[in-house]
Length: 412
Image (cartoon, rainbow, N blue to C red; front, top):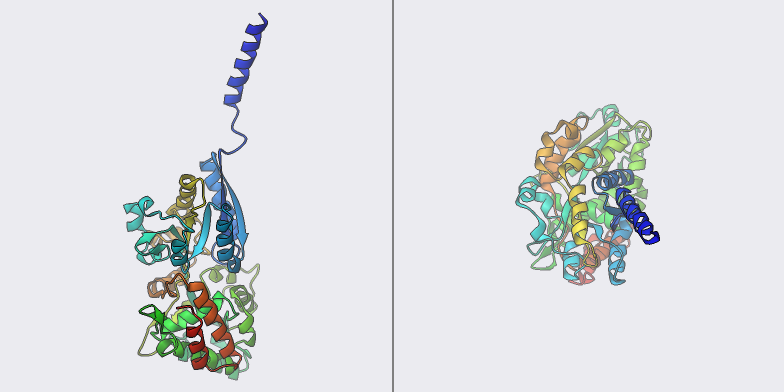
């Protein structure tokens, strides 16, 4: 009798347990993201919450670090044999990550539908040596932002179409006493400066590498650095630009202290937000200018992808999360700080309404995106160029000597 009663109780307990929802997800993923620019931390958390509701069997732990820490955090975690399942990576890292087996080759997971639906330029973000190492997620380039009110007061009818015109317009604004230093750049000794430099290299028709060897020390690469030095030494550029990152540029522009600023997509809607910005409603945006006889516009490929690390023990669940985060539905919902990778999204009013000016600039800028050099030794090359830019701006070296030294120290 007692045995029977015990069995009954045990059976009831098992049935009851099966009816109670699982208190813990069966799989936990660790994901590493960036704590600045593009999608905000709040956006990423909201996207992830939506994923968790649709996939209750998968829990995602999020970690956010500044862009400057993203690469090293990923590599160090890999070396420790654990860490992250999903990582955000810059367009400049697939060569290194593929060579050192940091990321998993996901070529077999990319469907024909994905290949056809995503803008062709976006795929360059995640490819190396003919293979795919993730899904493109942030499609981004730098645009020229301008303060419409300041240009109007200066009697300027249209924003500049060439970099020389930008210099002329900034001089007009300065001479009329509207702003002492009309231009803001992110020229701190960091990757930010390389993005601005690349934009100018693209405008001047330069090359970073030829046959795998440095080629930036002459031609368009040299012209680009000479322009930076000229803009800085002329007094038209905010002198603090040599210490600015993109967020510093945004704050200066939003405070009304810059007539022109080069920055990523995310600044458009942030600078137009009256809660935080003094220039809301006065923000203009156009593709970064070109150079007469050489280019109509200029742009750097600043896109980023989501990939699965080779240390992940849950690659299938990680891919499920990545495809959700990069899906057209998710991207269209959060299209205010980063534009979608999907071609047909640009015909969707949910994406275009209220940011027609940005979309118009994006159609030109995204088509003109110029890549930073693809090499497994990118970090060494970037560090050498960052130093060359700083030395040139500070007058410690001529652009010719600084770039020659960068080429010698690039590891290539």
